[in-house]
Image (cartoon, rainbow, N blue to C red; front, side):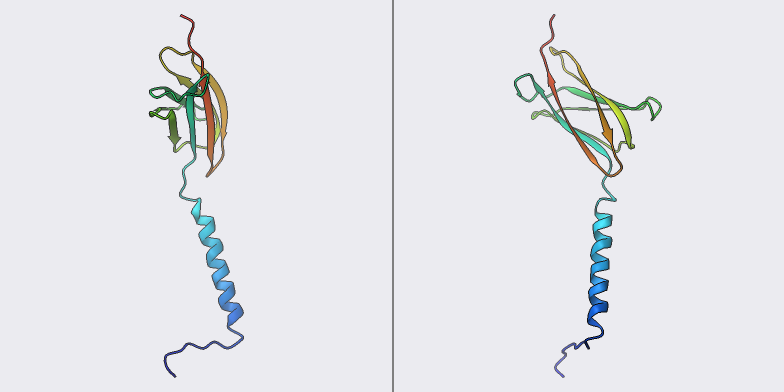
Length: 122
């Protein structure tokens, strides 16, 4: 023999079963490290990104706990590590009327939202 590994026909199904089991386990763990989060974007009424807006998330189930984030130049934001549940989201920026909406965060999931702020009437 030249170092070849030979399998008899009886061991092939076992190896195939082990490979399939490993693949399924890895697929299951793939999302296990992902924290629940809300991601989104804040724009003006015509869709222009609004940097510098504050987006906050509040959950009654989390006893009033609140998280907030600032939007970047592209209007994007992310609120990570949120416990699963229903959240009231609020987006605010100077010169614009604030906007609110609700979002449901599920275990291991990412929830996406878009805010379109209108100029305030001052």
